[in-house]
Image (cartoon, rainbow, N blue to C red; front, side, top):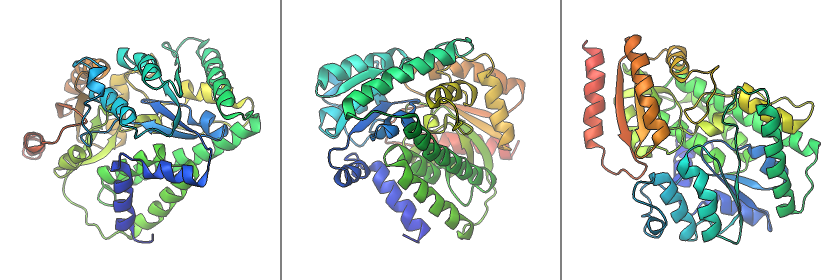
Length: 384
């Protein structure tokens, strides 16, 4: 596909299809291949890739399915992403999974391995225990052992012994993917009229639904075509969106916001961009991945790291993006996200940065009130 608009339209169709055609296409090309599903926020996908598996990021289903069966397994106070993700499995849309991994980022997420294990005994359900205190000098050693434990389980599942060279080859592929994603975000930051936030979101989203080698080719093609795109710069307020680290806002919500302003940076799907620099391709690759999680990573309210105060990191993100304002959002029922809103609000007020606080849910379908909110917010900045 040489037409950029056609490529982006196809990507959106793939991203919104809850039957996951890109995953099923990979399985058709790789009979007997195994897929590892992992919950938000971060999973070292190089481990699965090196074992010959396809890592798949499970991000819920938004409003495209109704969580009828899943609601009988959860309380009503549980976040939407946990319910719709389980519904995908209960409705046989994830019948290709061979393993599922979750993380203790919150009370809900740490319980998912048990819930998925009871409902889907046909595949492995694991918890990857990421370090709670990233500042402990033992954190990299601890995390490397956790990675080795998960890797051993994947080796048993696939029957393949993963060598250091296998991991280094995978690290090289994913380093390239992260470099291309950084380049995509740089274009969005510098010339947001050439690639909208929703288009960049869809392109990033597909990283978790297709082989990284293919995603690298896709990104390279898009980046080559972007400078030739016939789009005019508009006089819009530049904003940073904060709050999409786990449950994802609906695509229509992102489009509603960007109708009124440019979203020049964000934390959408941050787990796919968690590592901010290349993982070293020398030494022990497992230790390199573990150290990179702590030393070469972004910030998030689900990781405690005193060297990365979240308020300061948000302010830095705003300045680096040359943004004029910030939208601070949180998913309904998300304790980590809602807790951080207070700290962000105080920091933004202190720096006199205009901000808008909002709440969202992935299954939202009505955006008229939000549209009015955002437009009023933008007008207050323009006519202040």
